[in-house]
Length: 156
Image (tube, rainbow, N blue to C red):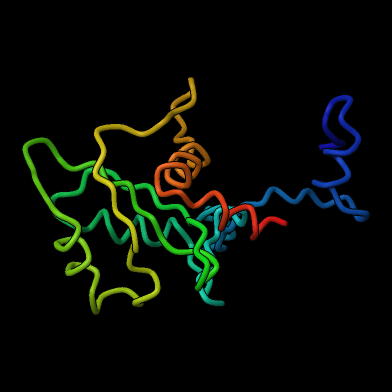
């Protein structure tokens, strides 16, 4: 890729001086030389100095027998910098509570990866192409949990 069409600034941010394209994707290389995309660097949650990859927490939550789908984002937190929020869509006919999810996580994933906040939802905000809009989840939660001031201080 030579660059973004008529977007010199975007090109400078994505392509380094040696011509490498920095996509922002996190990946691991398989033994056969192919890469497995594991997440996005900008989605990484930093809680008290610990790096948390949302995809890792999501994949763990998928192992819960009642969970159909999960989306994980970081929310601003005055003490830890960020904390984990999980939006969870349950399988049809299932019911669940936050305690059940936290108990399921306890001892199986690191304590700092266990969602601080959990919301059970019927759907996720999506693009027209079917991609979850995590930024909208984060914005909604910041607004509804009155975290605007914490978010403002962290970005100042």
